[in-house]
Image 1: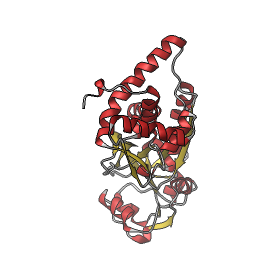
Image 2: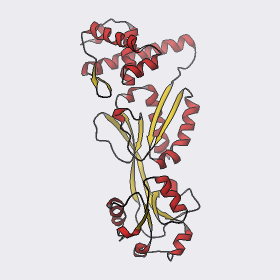
Image 3: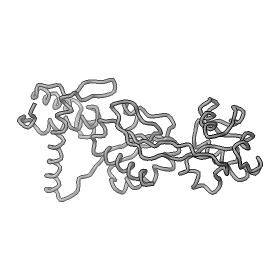
Image 4: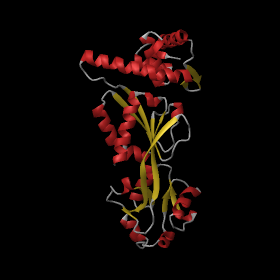
Length: 296
């Protein structure tokens, strides 16, 4: 269908565009400051005018149909043109406003995001930031977050992701703890060491032994699901822990284990929902995080 030959009301087109960007009628109504039934009528009127279904209802919102996806590019171009007209008339930059929800592990939320959020607040003060600091992966398809920092590549086709870099994780402990176990210098010396882990399962042991160690479950003496608690346990001299270099190298109270072992390479992925990534607000934050963490 040649969309350029279709003439329709801009208010209806804008209602469609914001609904597509926000993913639901309720969120779009809040973004536009109008009642949800009014917005729904505008979208329905546009569908009736075009004779096409633009959205399908999903369990957690609206999903664009193929016709809706095709129309979105044309309406977005109209929106950008309208924005340029508004700028010319008003003589000021268009503000980007709204809430952005970022999900990250506790360590990344505490040590990587704060300077990025500070920069974002200066660059786009209209954006309010919510950070979900959790070691559980937020479900972006259910709108538990808009953007997520993860250590794995998403498999769902409706998510977009960018691999930013690989973090290097090393073994860290306090100098006092290393002295207490005889200042190990060889991998076999660590067979008598105590380790702080996230659980008593085999995953951590497999990862450590793959680096060249020979550990058993008896070496994992303290466990906690919280990465931050693990870190403070290591800082208190409880044992040895595996942490990213971006954290371990910044704390003078701990040191990297002086044993010749390779690092554990941990990929850092930035992920967003495909539909949310069409939002200027989400795109701005996505690019800001990507640029900051790719350079660092």
